[in-house]
Image (cartoon, rainbow, N blue to C red; front, side, top):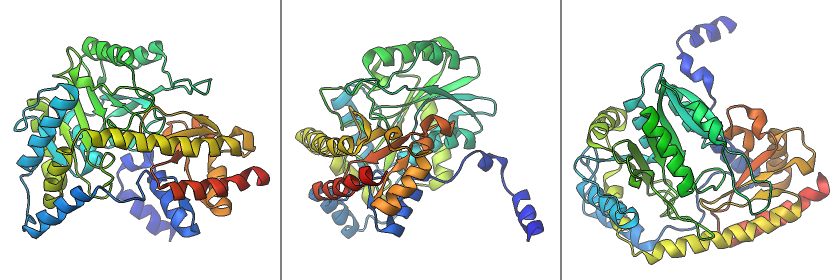
Length: 400
């Protein structure tokens, strides 16, 4: 048996030795196994808007069931261009600058495969969405991590050190990945921070790859600013977005990239041979979704803010130290008050004994020790789901 395993490992790529399977998705499996409430993976447990579902049903009924244009249905690309113009004032040519992918996840790996060569480096802020590090490795690049440090006060912000960020840039740097609003922290990067990153990109001739999937989910008066709209960045930014979060359709897998024409050409080549195309009827529904009235986004943000403010007090009362998010739909917490050796032991106890699944913070860091006393909760759930989770978490303090 040992010889057989050795032989099988011979066939494996060395790249896969540098990362594990998704911890987030594993926690969903654990929630299902133990009958726990899933506050781990970021998908809503409430319906998508009726008009968007109806558009998908109508597209299927109209026999839009075959391949769309590889880089995206024209209706959807036009709608993406229109929304970027309306929301951010960015003019985009839907024929030469937009590629529709199988979710923003594929958009990210297609982009990195299209632009990175062996020996390139990619700057990533941490804690980071867990795909970014493996994506860089799979593309042949080396990730360079820059820390976002948690706030020291309840109303504080996650901050990075300007000197540390500058030190991460050199002649090997090909790209910087920026996720704003941020998963897992809920940080919304400010104009001042974005200008600093812009200046480094221009100075070192670096590409900015911005994941803006949570652009409409904002709280406390924060504003989302697309990097591509900053002076000097239109020709060196790839903007990634998708339907999943804004329209509660995480399973549809429709995302996209917006990039300068030459970079778009490269992304389209990778996308074509990676997945061919995103689901055709859901692309038509996506065009309908992007045409939804602006009031929808205001209502979306307000509803998620109410969910945030419903869950956080329950977590604080149970003994968590919460870091207040300004965007997205996650809250990072500090668990040091509970006395567990690390986040893995804590989340294992939480899902098995308390009946609530969360994500261990170590999965968002290059060095697991940096997140060993943190866990992330997703609050994109119905009120009754959050209330039941809160009820169960009350028992945590008694059993610590």
